[in-house]
Length: 100
Image (tube, rainbow, N blue to C red):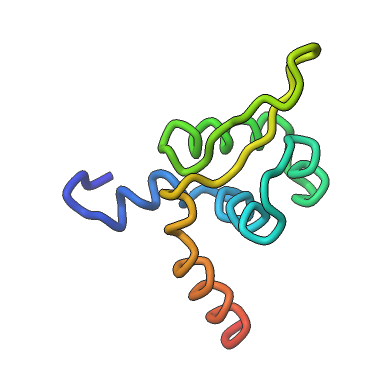
């Protein structure tokens, strides 16, 4: 990755398969639990989903909130940084509608 290129830096966070679809689901459906994402992203392996969530969380695009202490259960939601991806998501959707 070229650390001077903002596109390369962005793709380092959101460029892997499934990542943008996780963000899409949170935009459309609000906070999501792991199993919600697993069900909506048909075909994603649990370890892949876990890795993508960790990457997004480490980047500050999503945050984890506990909704149950015993047993510990969490849901994930977009942060302001994650919500700022809205225009990119819209542009990608429009491109997909027009060209695919």
